[in-house]
Amino acid sequence: MTRVFLSYAEEDGSAARRVAALLEQHGFDVFWYEKTNLGVFNQTLATELGRADRFVALFSRHYQQSDWCMKEFYTADRMATDTKTNRPVITVCDVGEFDEPVDPFVGNHARQDLRTLSETRLAGLLATFGVQAAAAEEGGRFRNREQELTNLLNALSLSSGQDLWVVAAPPKMGKSWFLREVERGLTAKKWGGTRLLDLARWPELWGAPAKVVVELMGVNVVPEDDTLTEDEIEDIAREVSKRGDNQLYLLDSAERLDRHTAAEVRSALTDVYAHLVERRVRKRFSMIIGTRRPDTWRGLGRYRQHRFRTLVLSEFKLEVIEDAVRDGSPDAEDSLVRKSALLLQQESDGLPALLLAWLRWAQDANLIGIERGLRKPATFDAVTAKYVKTELLTRDVLFPSGDGNVLAKKAVELALKVLVPYRLVTQSHLKFHYDDDQALRDAVGAAGWKLRDLWAALNSNSLLEPRSGLWRVINPPIRRVLYRYYYRSDDERVTAHEEAKWCYQRWTVNEAGSEQVTMMKECLWHELCRQLLQQPSELRQALPEAAGQYAKAFLSSGLYDRREFVECVHELLIEDHEFQLALYDHTGLFQEVLSAIDTAVSEGT
Image 1 (cartoon, rainbow, N blue to C red):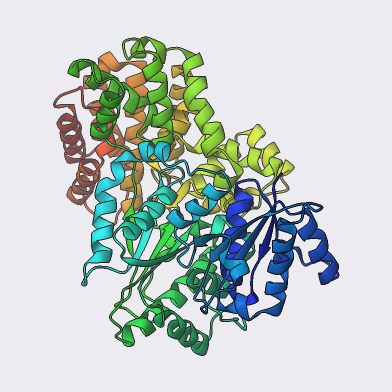
Image 2: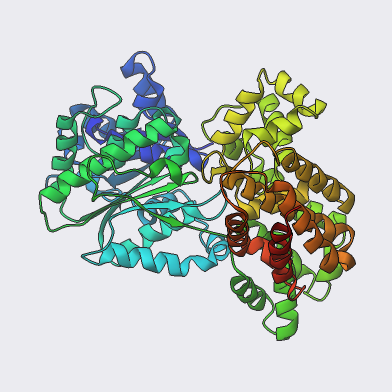
């Protein structure tokens, strides 16, 4: 493993942490004093310099003024020309302003301009280590983001555009790639300076909101506590305002922060922004938060006019998949391209990384054999099952905060299995299955948990999202993929929907108001899924009959009259695109379902 000695002044510690994390991520063994904190400093330096294969100096005015830093550099420079010692390759990275003339010993070595720590410039540093950034494949994975990217870049470029953004996406939807594309786009436009902090690399910051802000802004402010004081906010704003260019600050993997920490960071960032706006400098100060949990970034704070606007990255649509199929098979007939795209959409649900895997498989099958190949269990195992295991059911996704051992992971996976048939879930859904599932209870006990601990773990992971009130959802395309992964046969799926119906039917009398209307709609959804699997030829007659029966069974609330109940059910079903899509091949059946509900309620019992 290549050993790297990182030399820097204390004032440039923020840049040092960023560079060290980048090099360590790519497999280099990095020595930097703040991290290692070893015993006697002199002996440590001598030992590490003697072992180093590469010497990286983060050069600035602070570095020039530090006798210790220059001593490190002279020692490395002498070793680089000494045939009797290990000869490190020296790279000088400019991370701040410096005084001219530069010492000839420094000027004689390769220089990298990292005064703006953009992805492009960091990629240039990696290139000197023989590491090439693999952006081409990522670009293919997230090819439908051009419109969102253009809109955001325009907003940041227009003088009246929005400055505060949250880019939200479930796991593996291209959020981190998108942030880096924003950074590259602004760099290409020579818009100004950008700075990105990826919290996935800095677990020590996850519970320290003040340090997150200081690290993100790259300022020399030492917080007295976890919450920034007003004076510290002003100091940060003053230091940032002195920077000559437009400034964009990007915070990625913000789902690592718990709700309280995220709220503290959001409040502090909007306070800093307000101070910058009040200074009326002719520069843009923008911030983008990348997260899988956008709900933690909602709120006004003290400054109502400074709110984060959310941009959601969703799954790929059919048109994008058609373009991808056509790119891979330019000579294929349009009808074959369309049919293949529909099949690949059904299998991937538009999830970028899963779609890429299916596209590779389809190209190997030359498109002609897609339909036949999809019916083979081995194909599903090789593509979708592999994706689920390596991309979704991972510790990073299930336990963003870094907690969770093997036993906890097993308990969460079993809980997900019983929940993925549901489009809406609450703790009551989980308890319904927990009470009747010995394997789930055993796994929860083995993890040292109780039911409430399991529910808390599910709520903190990246798959479960809040919807309204107590309702939670698993992101729809991810839910559908997990459903197909956990329930492979039609019989297993029929049983899952039957259990889900019974879960809702238990509440026909106990619940009231809009909750009961929602439960009726979901009960009808599970009946639709069961009929499509078990008796599709009888669907036109059976589904309206079931809809009428459920309407009578669930109409037991005294909070509204029959007409209000019907109108509410109609409204929810009309807004339910997934329900209507399931009836796409059954022309007119959706309207028959609405009429059956109306008739059943009008007739009473």
